Length: 381
Image (cartoon, rainbow, N blue to C red; front, side):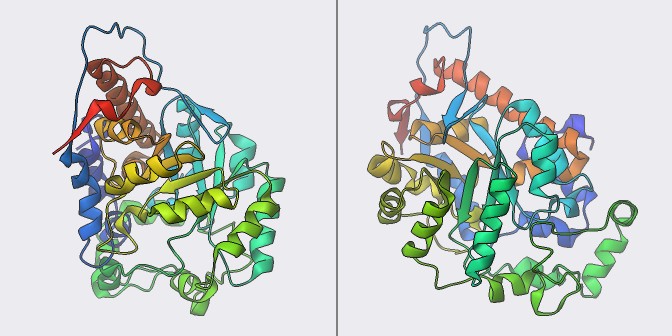
């Protein structure tokens, strides 16, 4: 299979699986526990049908949206994801370049492998900085100060990851950063020599947002230790309210899954929330993001920008979320599979196909712009 033979999410997934050692592929592909929530995230869209209109004159389609003060050319953005240079040596540089080309948001993770400063300097795509809440309050403030100096416009605090999810695929292969692979995992790396050549012949793997705080040589401060030892499970609403005030700009909470939490986000001055269950990678058995989107939008959608992610594989999934009131939709695995398959061309093809699907589906729906989408376009079974 080649990149030009990739026409949808599953095609990108197959090509990524062909290119990556299985421990790394499973890190992208897997979810928590029995992966029930991960599967439900995509299946939930099938419980809802689109109701098109005809003869509306849809020669010109405008799919632009405004999210937290930033105008996007399309209603899909690249969610922040960790460890991207493991998947392809271009990593975040490829994703930022593709987001720039398509006029959309790009998220840099605190576990990213290219610095937020480099991305800000070399690309015009509006940048989200996604970070976690640490026991060291000074570290939290230092990270926000650094983001301010890099001219980051949107701060995104992930609130559903105060500890790591139980990702059993990673336990079976021994996947961790730094690598501590078992025999099966080592064999899988040996069977994909091209990945290994690229890994060792390009710049040394690093986590520039956190390199001053994590010992990449291992020990308690490995990536696993980062979630279990450095993040603060005592984080509460007062802590976040102080961060929102300190930041003084666009502040978004990622991982909101109930109405009361959404209302609290409004009350402390957040300008955005992401309805998300972390792609099914944290609490297995939780509701799908789509199942809960309408309830949250109905409660706070007129007071705060509601974004959405988890399980999105098709343009019709995007239109269904937008019809329920989401301002924009994040994708993660879809562009990561593209990245793993072919670097920047892979990410660009994933975004290009998604954009083409949304434009075609809007025409078939009889909608000229995103604002014309509403719950009137939907029927639940």
